Image (cartoon, rainbow over all chains, first blue to last red):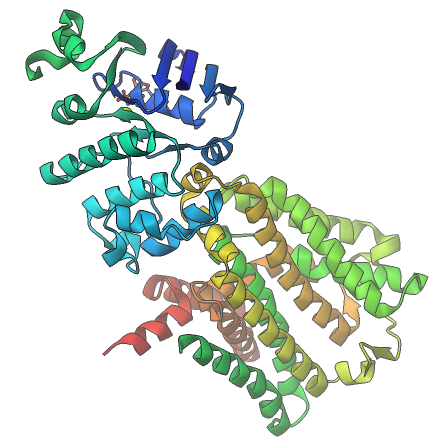
Length: 232
Length: 314
Ligand SMILES: Nc1ncnc2c1ncn2[C@@H]1O[C@H](COP(=O)(O)OP(=O)(O)O)[C@@H](O)[C@H]1O
Ligand SMILES: [Mg+2]
């Protein structure tokens, strides 16, 4: 079953085309990695899927057209996202903002998420006072409160230590396998990408350059030339 | 523990006014105290907006004067009892503020300030021009019946009675603001203030809560306006001029809006500073200005911020 489908996504900034007729189709429970050079349009695509900015094209969640819905409505339907630039509430305690996130979607207190992300020891600290890695985990925890079935993660491992990235990758694998969560993840660390992705979509200059299984992408000469270079 | 301490604090605050009034001889000081209390409630409303929405209004005096004008204009028509008229004027003001809020809270910073300034000055112009209803620059005198809310009007029009009444209303307003800040609504609006986009992506609508805060702050300001009109039995366009909004803003910033009681403190300090300076010089506004600059530079969180810092030092 297709969990998330986008067709003909086009986004222009003034005269500049950031995304040009991009289509994407993600299976339920799949982990899809979105890779490509800086400025390829990865974040713009996440924005389009989550409803951050108006754009052309159609987005479907579990078969229903959500193109016109606000970000909040999409979130309440189970489509959640995190941000490339950490987006938390520095002047609130960790606990208070998880509670806030929980109240919006399922009315729970969200304490399960605190444990899931090892945030309970920090629960009563102000989010602005905790370490950078902890803030990144909090950003993810906000996105995952209320067990959304589809996650859009924009470089969640950016700035995390090697250990933390590995734990995050294992965590994502786990929720995808165990809870059937669908994940679209933008990631620069190819070790993380090849470790968790079921499928990879390569963006370049606002267009899909290639799409396929990790092994095929690794072997694709266009992708190697445009992006992977010596990394693969 | 902290909770019951706060309630004890509110009870003590509520008692201080009536007690003090008992010992202060009726007259000038009590009358000033009564008017300072109106100013403090006014500042409380403006500080509430700063704290919950993070926006600075240059037009809130409109909501101070509007219900007074409504009562003054409708009173002679004898449509309803005065109490109902008061309630209707408050409800009407809040409804109008909510409608205005739905538009103005979409913008932030300077744009918000300019929009609220324009709306406030628009109402000021209306009050000065629409002479048949408002009495123009001369304002209007209210002919109040002998009793309101079961109390003789005379009682509310002499300093002692009004000061005690206003002080109690002020305490109740402070409790309301405090309770709001601790409620889920308070948390939500503070989250919106700090990171509106993230709140939208968490599944909330953000426009209605922001407009509701705007309306609630207008209600506080309107309550101050009602007390003032009851006491003075008089309303004039001065009450809604933008300089009145500016004074309220100065009080809120002077006191500090990070804690609920900051603007109250600012209101009293400003009011008495103004009168003390006014006794020596006609340039009291520049003295206030200098004082404000000093406070803003030395204590960005206002007098309340300063006091909290002192207390939490080892
Ligand atoms: N708000 C904006 N205004 C103008 N151009 C933008 C804006 N946001 C992104 N862009 C441009 O769109 C392109 C794609 O950006 P982005 O999606 O952030 O790339 P990526 O996430 O793949 O690094 C870039 O060239 C970027 O400069
Ligand atoms: Mg990006």
